[in-house]
Amino acid sequence: MKHKGILIVVSGFSGAGKGTLMKKLIQEYDNYALSISATTRTPRPGEEDGREYFFLNRSAFEEKIAENGLIEYACYCDNYYGTPRDYVEKQLEAGKDVILEIEIQGALKIKEQYPMALLLFVMPPSAQELERRLIGRGTETPDVVKKRMNRAIEEAQGIENYDYIVVNDDLDECVKQLHEIIKAAHNTPLRNEEFIENIRTELAVLSKGEK
Image (cartoon, rainbow, N blue to C red):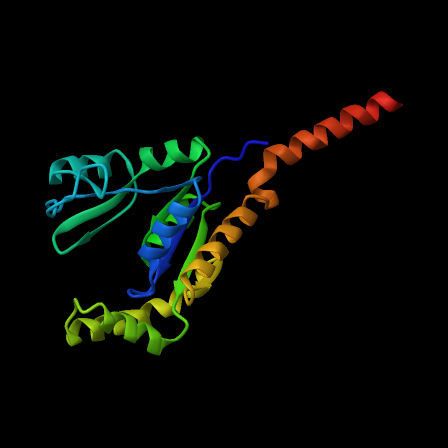
């Protein structure tokens, strides 16, 4: 029985370790594709088009918006960011589970378009640990850390909209747990309607043949 891929939306507080988790999940297991976002921002040193992002100019990005070529998009600091629809849907049709790392508002927009999307929220073991990780990065000022902690308070109000929470305490254990959740999601009845209908048809045919 061949499965179509599942669209997996991963959100979480800044500092919860989403990026590290996703990279390790893709390294450990071979059926995942990390969605590549499109953006109008200028590439940073070392970034390549089609690897970190699809880099588009503003008119090309707005053309994609007009033709419904993006699953979701937003504008941050005068630059557009969005998820190209064709890339995602090709991967899903090929049977790949596609991971999108997106904040809460974008995640809920995707759920409206793809009701079978699996929404996962990555959490730290405690608020104190989240703050410790943010400070431990050594790349952000105390003001930025405070802003991120305040943002986490807002984001915490939407966690109930997700299908599962995953607590990122031990990295290896968390990756294993993520993979098990996704594997189990493939076997829900709603994601196997065609297979179930085929079995029903076969049962009806066999039943008639026995009479």
